Image (cartoon, rainbow, N blue to C red; front, side):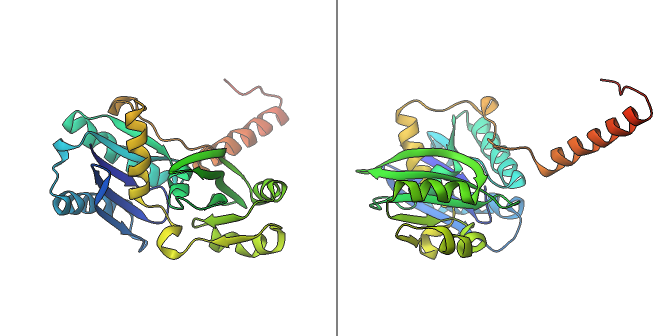
Length: 248
């Protein structure tokens, strides 16, 4: 089985090729270049390095979200375009699940933390049963205190990873009451190889869709949509103050 995997959901962009349960090539970049600049050259590089052509892939896997709205859209558009070009299915992998997969075989609770801004984090809780990732708490967008309260309640050793560590570490040290540690730099950010491993499991279970049916998972509305909603609200307030009922 051959899978091309893409993750552009966060600060890093990562692409990998998995073939017959082996990662044949992986390319990750975290240098603040836009994913639109880096993704296609990286895909060309891993296909060339792996010696496996795009039309030999059984599926195109992509981190489906949550994450950066722009990054998710770029990843989704790329995956959909490639899949449609070679008539292959798309496998969407929850971003936070993919991050948790980095810590395979860790004997404790795995808590990815992505910076979702406004003192919120995209997070979840996981553990491993053998070589299989088990979801304890599905990915969600919550205040940091919410997930820390859950961690403390479970009273189990925990590992944190993700770009949220740099944002929330001081609060974690202050409020996390269980033994905990932080993933090393090599495992801390999104990796397409982890997306590929989960995608292979999804493929065997038939969990996939065609290119037209795939869409990113945002978990919450974008800043532009929030600002638009606020603008409408202000317009309505002014209209009501003037004695008018806004249309629609």
